[in-house]
Length: 319
Ligand code: PSU
Ligand code: MN
Image 1: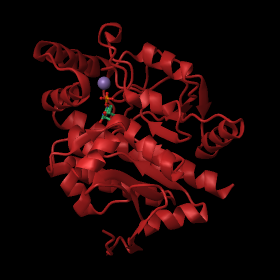
Image 2: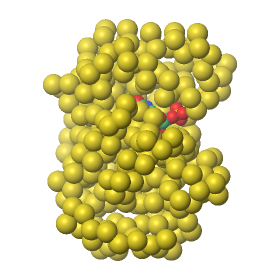
Image 3: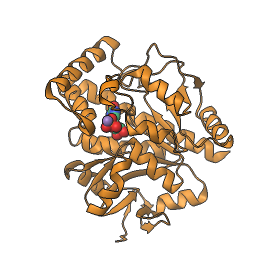
């Protein structure tokens, strides 16, 4: 059902978008119609990535960072049998507290049909962005090829969707709970450019640096926007992954991050976790073991990535 409410000084009337099952706020729709910058934001970290209320606070701060960059945030979730593009703080509370499903592309239809709460992963968010004509997005870290994928076949749908959604996605590289070299190999296979933002090596989520070179680099939001525009003008349909190192004052040392990740992987193996539960289990284990330090870097990098995505979207819109 359409509803009206006003917050942040914006008209947030929900209007039905031509795309099926999508209910988009007037603010997002107007920005798209004007050709202004719009940044899609995922919600799995709200439901599955942080203890409450850190996820809600991070989502609100991310939206503020997008606005501060001159763009419009489009936070995405499934509520009441619809895909919602643009959320209210009350919606975020429902996602955090309402036992939300983790929704990738395979889960969209059933979650709509069942009318339950769904929090979109990166892949789910990119699928919706593609449906709505949104070309910028931000997250903390993408899913990728898990270690031992040759045995489990556990390769995140985030990679598949990056291969087919024309969206500039800002992330802090890849968390080394994953097999990082294999993840980079699959991104190459799918034709996804990986653009280091002010860096020539891939950041590893908690850590600013790694031994893995990235194939491209941009030192300004405008340059990142130019790479994206050229990629799509060449007829490429895939995403561009912009890898933004976590803020220096919050980043962890490699040795500290490696120890946390090794302990989490060992616990997951002991517990026999598999499928969709793997990534949330590892994140929860790390947050419990490292406490505020890991949560702080996680929060800060998500907000910083939202701000950079907003700056790239704004640069793209000004051209
Ligand atoms: N990696 C993180 N933090 C996260 C996620 C991944 O460091 O919160 C979330 C994102 O929503 C991502 C999803 O899209 O987990 C990937 O899950 P899977 O590995 O099950 O595809
Ligand atoms: Mn998986």
